[in-house]
Amino acid sequence: MSILNSLYLSAPEIGLVVTGLILLLVTAFGGVKTSRGVTIAAVAALFGAAIFTLDLFTNPSFALGGDIWSGLYRMDAFGSFSKILIYLATIGCLIVTPKFFDATNEYRPEYPVLMIFGAVGMGIMVSAVDLITLYMGLELMSLASYVLASFARSDERSAEAGLKYFVLGALASGILLYGMSLVYGFTGSTSYLGIRAALDGGMSTGAVFGIVFVLAGLAFKVAAVPFHMWTPDVYEGAPTPVTTFFATAPKVAALAVLMRMALDPFGGVSDVWQQVVIFAALASIIVGALGAIGQDNVKRLLAYSSINNVGFILVGLAAATETGAAAMLVYLAIYVAMSLGSFVAVLMMQDKNGRQVENIADMAGLSSSNPMLALCLAIMMLSLAGIPPLFGFWGKFVVFQAAVQADMLLFAALGIAASVIGAFYYLKIVKVMYFDDPAGVVEGRSDTSRWIVLAITTLIVSPLGYLLTPLLGDVAARAASALFFVV
Image (tube, rainbow, N blue to C red; front, side, top):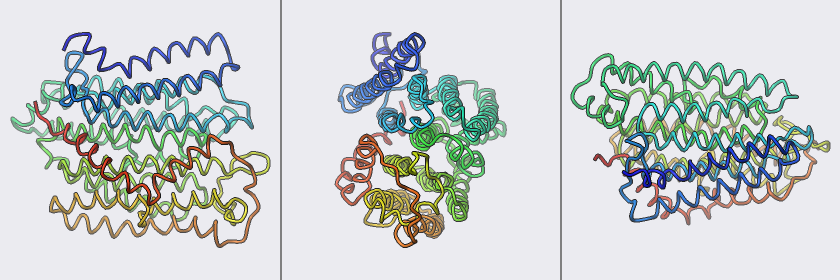
């Protein structure tokens, strides 16, 4: 494609980069007083990128997509679907953030700039069709995330979370790079098309090791067992708005990259990685559920919930079919709404001094002191548990349906059985809020912006969300089909 086509089809990333650089200059010269304006500008830029990406997704002229920048980057329905979720999740996180830092006066305009560059990295990741492009996007996202995790400089837990995330992230990057070097060495290409063509011509032991190392490096980013060890500590230690971000946008990007890698360059050798994904899915469901049971901190509990939900999403990948990929995208869209709503509800739980309430015992009797907040959080918890008629049930239903259609009955049965474990700790929170004696700790009032985000996400995961089923199923199927379109 021509340079003009390349510029047009990658306009969302280019626009965000330009916006980020301009806002960085504004930050440097304007200082802290520009925080509000920079945040509003960042939200506007992300919204504009989402609208432009939606136009690319719906425009019939780009129905088949295309490779640009000399085959390094692909504009297709799958990348557009993933980027829309990423941008919307990032917007939601930015909207609810400033109020959190009011108590410590630590909010800086660098925060939304980091979010923008993180979104750019995620956009590059999901559209990359070359190992080098993938790594560039991954590191751009990761570097922004490391700084965000340690953003609350007065909180030792935040500094610890940032350091842990950096060290383990560097380890994962090393594993990923080693796998990429093996794949390149045994296929002779960094291009996804070249890798697939080489693997279809025959597998070597070195290529198998390369595939395993690449998938292991990506498994760290999605927090799948056994590469989940960083998640509870980082989720607990990082500022809650940052944890909200980690649980939504980067999760979408990492899972989208894992899907594209497994189904595009490695799609012809699914028998090599299918058993690994099956193990990771079942292990994540079980470890996430069991690990959450004994938690007293709600952020650590939601961290294990994230691991648990990644296991369910990987059920669709293990099917290695177009139906399974579409089911993953449906679940991922619902999961973003559930996760964003859950963490926003946690953000809104404050004591009379405006400090964050994270202990589950302190939520006792919340239904009496703040019935609307308790109701929204209860809906989120029951939806995460997959209890009908809430929309979270539909996500689990479609991924297990895809597994059954792929003749993986035993795998589906084990996953369904293990999902029952997770219901315990979700119901525990509901029980504490509605049936325990009031603790009288959660007394703080929240602002309108948080209520708006919480109301929107609650409506999505409520039974009203089923009205979106036809539309969501159609767009997910179209996005998934792009992964199976071989030029």
